[in-house]
Each structure stands twice: as structure tokens, then as C-alpha cells.
Image 1 (cartoon, rainbow, N blue to C red):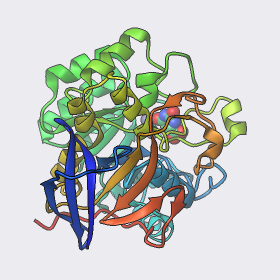
Image 2: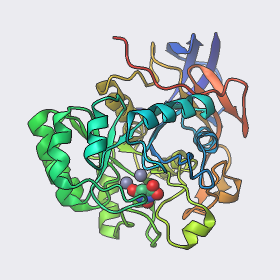
Image 3: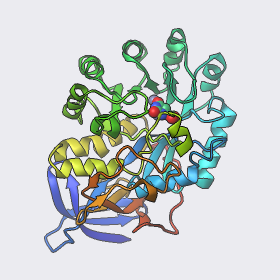
Length: 383
Ligand code: DOR
Ligand code: ZN
Ligand code: ZN
């Protein structure tokens, strides 16, 4: 049994709270009247819903070990791993191999995805139970593109689908989601047009995410989809927490040599929460929108997909503690990720992650991983 008296960020602002943890869960959350350390701020249950932890044959870019350390150092209690690995997670055997790799090597909690891009992987998709079946409809790292004409067969399986797509593919996905009642998650929206289509057609089976690089960056960087225009960027900020459900890093690690050759991707799992807190602190986003897109909507999405996640009385004890009393310059050379580069290098951050807790235990404290830091797959909700 652990208890903390601490400032918590809620959608209504910062609240002094007494947190009681037992058996991995939050057993009570009560208003607290006494003194708390003003430099510590609890951010509930951040999960990074879009990371590429590579490994298998690309250990030089990232391993599940280094990626999961980076996640905890970035304040994420859990991650959702993408399947465009080498080899790809495209059959039951590789899917099970990915699960045991995470079970052995991940320091944070996790969910695993599966990739469908041809007839064989479509058949194998019937045999597995991933969080999402990931589909690429356009070119990016890995070249696992599904012919759009096969999309309908996949939606008929009624397994949740995460789509990396252009605008037309998104329209097609929305149509099929409505026809079959299949959950559709649109990855990394980056333009006003995409958000407008979503605003018009979104229902409880359709969710979407935005990345920090599409929100913050105004100069070019090698990434897919490409960096947004100023017009798009402003629109994305305005849609955060309402049309755009969640922020996810799309952590896509590459070696420095591969980056120099133009590989797509941002090393982002360690910087998403500090960047978003900085936006909150500078009043570029409200506490309500922050809480929605950084934890409340992730919790709602996972609960809809049958997984138990989210910081509340009776829920899992997952949270980060930020040190909001000191500023720091973003320095990729200090990343735990193997990909020690960032388009945000040198940016001033208004907080640093001092602790990350998972299932009621501190996994990461002041730059070090504790004896508890051993990840598990986020289990199916038993209710
Ligand atoms: O920039 C990206 N990198 N976008 C993607 O969609 C894939 C990712 C990767 O795996 O490198
Ligand atoms: Zn993508
Ligand atoms: Zn991605």
C-alpha cells in the first residue's frame, strides 16, 4: 500500500489530491487540504498508442529494451507497438514471437499490433487477437502496402483496424467501418481536409490521432505523412481533444546514418509528454483538451476495445510525475532510445519526467529504472 499527497492535473485544472494505491490499482482518490510539493505534478496514465520498437533484424535502430526504457523516461506507462518490423508481424507465429519478445524484454506495459498487406497475411489475421490490424495504404518505411480493393475483406473480420492512409483511403475506411461496424483508428492525421472529413463522419467506432511533430514543427523533416503547413497546424491544435482524439508519438527510430539518407521518422516517445505539458503551461492548450488527448480518450478507446487502462478510483495505478519546477533544453544525446536525434533539439521544455509508475509501482525514478520495471501485456478486461 502506497499513498501520495500530490497535485494532479485534471480536466478542471490542478487539484491537490491524496492518492491511495494497493494491489496495482488506485484504491482511493480524495481531495487533500495539506501542503504538497508544488514542483511535482501527477499526469494520469499516459500510453503512447503509436510506437515502432523495431528489434528483430533492426536492433541497430531500436530494441524492445531500449524503446521501452525510452517510453518510461518519457512518462508513458505503456505503448502500442507497430508491426512494420523486419520480418513484419504478418502471421500467427511471428505475432506470438513478438509477444514473447515483449514479455521478456519490455520494461513498460504494452499492446501488440498485426500487419495485413496481402492474401496470406489477411488469412493469418483470422487467427490472432491483436489490439489493431495495421494497414498501410501508401508508401512509408517497410513497403507493406495493401491493395485498396482488399480492404473490404479485412473490414469483414470486424477486428479493430489502424490505418496509415491518404485522404481517399480514409474515406473508403470510414465507409467500410460504417458498413461492417468495425472499429477504425486513423493514424497521424496531418491536414485540415482530413479533420474536416472526420468531423463530418466520425462516430463511436472511428477514432484518430495526431503526432507532436505535426502539431509543433514548422520546418521540414523527413517523416510520413509530411510536416503540415501552418494552416493545417493551426487547425490541428484547434481540433485536439474533440475531433482529434489523442496525441501519439509515432516513435520511428532510425540510426543517424539512415536519417542522413532520408529515412522517415521522429524519435518521439521520450518527448511527447514534456512537449505537450509545455504547450499546456504556455496556454496553447486548455487543461480540458490536454487531459482528453493525453489520457481520457486513450482510456475510452482502450475500454471500447476491451482493455483495462486508465487512472481512476478502482482503475490501474499508472501515472507520470513531472518536475514542473525547472526548465530544460531538449537534448537528444541523453535519450534512452537508440535514435539520438530530434527535430525538437534545443527547444525549451517547461518540465521533465521525474517518475513513471506502472500498476501501482514506480518503474522509473530520477533517471533510473527500478527493480519493478518489468512490462506486461495490457490484459483483456474481464468485465
Ligand atoms: O515517418 C514515419 N516512419 N511514418 C510512418 O508511417 C512509418 C514510420 C517508420 O516505421 O519508420
Ligand atoms: Zn504511419
Ligand atoms: Zn507509424
